[in-house]
Image (cartoon, rainbow, N blue to C red; front, side, top):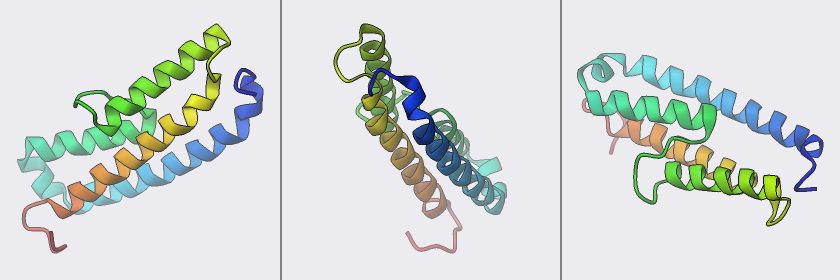
Amino acid sequence: MGYLPGTWRDFGVTVASLAGALTGLLFVAVSIKSEVLARSRSLASRAAQTLVLFMTSAMPDERASPDMVTAVLTGIAGLSFLLKAGGGLYWMIPAVLAGLVGGVINAWLFLIKVPGSSVPG
């Protein structure tokens, strides 16, 4: 099953739906904090990184971060799929989980670490 892309259709639909919902929530969070976001390059970078995690599940820029883990696991999935050995598309399950978890963590940190936020943190 790891080498039959057609059998992964429902997985792809589910992941796309979840990522779309989380992306929508990120846009709400960004719109709530837009004044602070405009003044802070680091917060703007975190918001952009989170958006990329939700939309592509890969944006490596930190050592041992969910971003790097996602990129490495996606690469392993692609390579093992091409070689027809080593698990194939089964590697996409932890890759997607790492991307979504990393995106949720970034979004949460974005909301609670914003100066002047009403949320304690």
